[in-house]
Length: 368
Image (tube, rainbow, N blue to C red; front, side, top):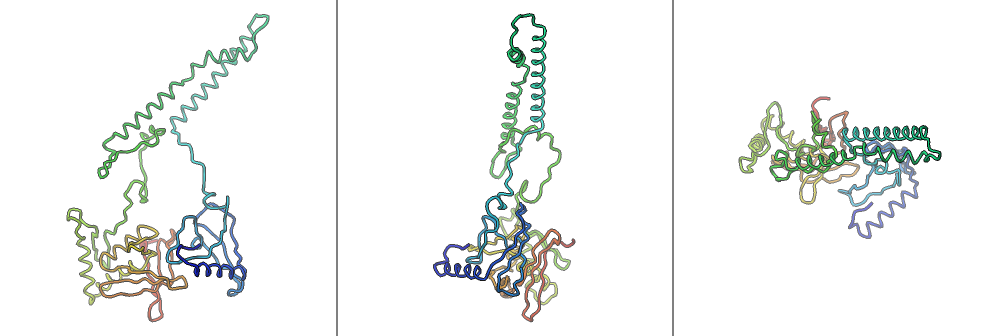
């Protein structure tokens, strides 16, 4: 897969690399197709490379539909799952029918009445056949249909019409309710599905996560604690006319005093926020990350003057994070990233130090 703009030389290089891999012999072992997107257990081996041992691959080496290349011009890809075995097809399910409990109860009642109507019509037809004194009685099915036509008004067909009319009335009341109006956009609620209106009255508790279901989903840096000292809030005061938060100037003043140990701790804290992440920088100098939490932390470091200026690949899976701070510009050589997991509840980066050592920076939960 290549990004546009590679040119003829780039296309030739792609063909040469692909031909080289095929000539050496590329062998990939895959697990059976399954719908889980995050779980992938497979391995690959290129003949003539190393000891011909299989290297493990995970979901980080797996590109789903819609992925976009960043910080690289082209990659060599292999279509592993196609057709009905793709993740998209395995995760496609028919949409469930949205019916309320009252509507299901009403349907069951109508089915019971319909079964009772057929039973009574059959009973009357048999009784008419048995008690008839006519020499040429009518066929059974004719008598059955006659009683069925006579008794069909017992079906509550108008109840369905009244049921839908009530749904429309309730939907109109929701759309005109002033308490369900957004004060910022002045938009009222929209009743897009009127078939489950009566179940709203049965809701006692509403549980919501932080993904924006019932919130604005805005992750912003508010407070921090460094060496026992708390700084904040970092949120601008709307009553101050958009002026910077006082905590930003307070932190900048502490970091300017480089002689004290606490100043070094504050510098290290915000420098760690600018280094320990997987955020990328767009062409318009905006940050893009895997989660809004990471972006909020990097933007908080930039607000106090410790900004991520560039992120470049250093080869071997590493990257260079260039951080500009009031005390100078420093390139951090990130050799490995330990991604966040639900078990570990942290993410870490391993940085190479000039003396040949390693520096581990970690962020995440304070307890596991």
